[in-house]
Length: 449
Image (cartoon, rainbow, N blue to C red):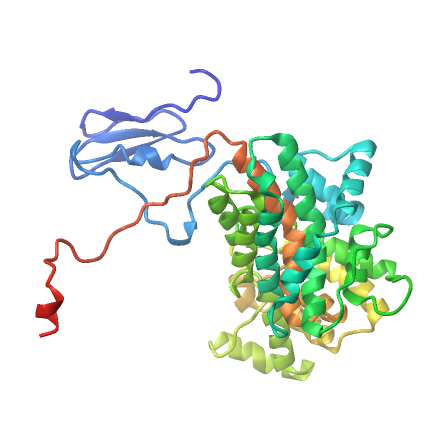
């Protein structure tokens, strides 16, 4: 068989028992007695192969029913690897622990988008391009100023990202690699500007323009918090902590928002529209709002003394333990360990958040309790990140905006991978129809009589 070729499904003649070859699945259709040999590639079978299993030529073939795509691979990707059982997260093969310790967010962004760590020349050119594209058109500023005073920052970012497609109509030329590079640079560069301006808008403060002399994360903090001072100087420890948080959020395989970016992008729309879909998905409380829920939980517990009663409430089903457990990780979320360390650096500058003592004691008790151990409930990335965001003076409604800024390179890397993958098709999932059939229409004169 030629290298890279997927073996075709074979229909075997009905018989009591058929020995299957290695890396294949033998399926017996009890409706017809027919048996089929389905190839297994990378631990998967093709859904289209199941479609060839049918009772007759004029009947539809089998399909899978998988709400939420919990066991369906929609793509092949070389961007992010996760082993949930072992608590492993890698970007392009590099462990997240090494990247968080040794790298910068923009270096990781380059890695995600282009598949390899940049050379010195590539990195300097990349940083230069992004730095000088942080400014947005003045009409974008006017657009954002048109929102109500109480507009949610995430809604403003979602709308503004989508609006960028009207400022860069050349973004539709997605087949051109140089053009894709330009749009990716623009999107990564402008996300902090849009996020900071949505923050200032909610506070009724004037928007602060980017400062090209500052690093990516320093510039973001400047646009957030600069007032009348000539130059905003952020504490290096805060800059590093926020940079690490951006790295940890940069990509996480085929989650809800990444799936949204790929699904919308499969129509071959421009990347701004596709990323706006990702922002919209992240806006939902089941995806981007978990760290805010952790803060509410810690505040409701109130003190370390109340933790035992809270734990009992969780076991009895009267309370929810937020920030523990993950759909993917059945071990420690590797990002949680890194964030816990970043907490110490942040609180050196800001002072210790009283909720930290509750969080640490809650984690300690939960990790020693058989109830939680048996259920593999370990702290995830959201357990400590909200504490850092609050210490940096972000209101809860800004938490998902910070998430979106960090996730932008991952979304764009996934979008570019989709565009260049010849196997990808426009997203068009099947459905299982459960409604009425062949009803007779009754004219309204009779229905209303």
